Image (tube, rainbow, N blue to C red; front, side, top):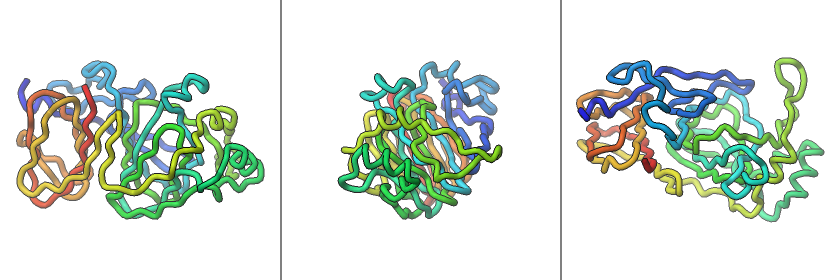
Length: 270
C-alpha cells in the first residue's frame, strides 16, 4: 500500500448538546461513523475500511459542565447492559474536570447525595494544565467542568449512565432523566482518583504526548491516530496543521516530521 493511502482524514462530524459541542473525530460507532475526506477512500465509512475499529476519538468543547456520569466496565456491563467504556482525557486548554470519589465515599453516600442535590461535593476536582491527562476507567464517576476543551480517547461505546445533572433543566424546561439504578451498578467506589499525567497506557490503547524536533518513527503496528497539538507535522509528505487529525492504517514503520511541534499519538491494536 502506498504510504499516502494509509492516511485517513475525515469529514467534520459535529454534535450540539445542552452543555456545548462535541466533534467525533475518528469513529466507527454506528451512532456517528466517520466518513473519509479525500484520497483513495474518499466518501467511505471507517467501519467499511477497518471493520471493528476499537476506539472512538472526540473533541469536547464544554461551555457548561457535563452531567456527573459513569460508564460500565467489562465486569459490570454484564449487569448494566450496553457496552464497556474506558477513556482518557487530554486537556486542550487549561481547565477543570471531576474524576473519582473522595476517600471513604460509598455507594449509599452517593445515592443520598444525589437525592439531596449535593453529589458534586463527593467528587475529586482536578484543575489541569493544557496537555495534562487523566485516565477514566469504566466504573469511575466523573464530570467535565465549565469551559473545558478536551481531547478524549475511549473504547468504541456510547453507553453513559447519568448519575447527577447539577439540578439544571433542558431546553424544554424540564430536568433531564437520570439513570440512577444503572449508574450505581456500574460505579466502582474502590477506584482511586486519577493522577494527572502526560501519557496513558491501558489494555485498550497507548497514548503519548510527543515533542517532535526533526523526525520521530512509529512502529506502524495496529492503528495510530495523530493529533497536531502544538504546531504542524507531516507524514508521507502530507502536512497536518495544528488542531488536525489523521488515522494511519497499520503496516510498516512510518515517520512524523516536525520542528518543535507537539503531537498527541494513540496506538491501538489491530
